[in-house]
Image (cartoon, each protein chain N blue to C red):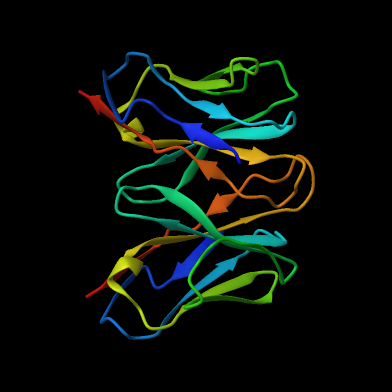
Length: 114
Length: 116
């Protein structure tokens, strides 16, 4: 009965490859997010979708492309991976509406680019 | 833009004692939420406690409580009766209430170690 799940949990790949990370939530939330945690453990928002509509698009390289096929799923595709993309990527979800915006996080995907 | 500052990169406490983690933030908004999340070695981000800025009463969750000083823009976390399982990185985070579905802005984190 995992609330927010991500696959894979670990991803090791070569520079230049393309990879995807998947996220699913069963909390019935309508808003989902991608955060990046760098090597110093600093967390920063990348994208957010509400009801499949992109509502936050931070200054992120075009090589990163999120996709939300439905409210319960948010995927992150990364093209032409670079060494600097190595990080932990967290998916989170929340419900739109005052008093309900607490974000719940997935377990994270550790990406290592060699 | 909002900023969140945690001035204590590392702290340690003896088991069963009380520890307070500091957080200050900067915003021009009047309606917002503040959160504390913990990240144990398992890497999972776990919500510890949440505070709405319009509420004067400080939030509490069992052994965890906050000291919210809106005028001073301060939001500290007090952990009472510390347990070994409290060892984790603790992040303070800010969310603008006016924009629902908004981003969390995180502080740099405080690594807390509870010693037996």
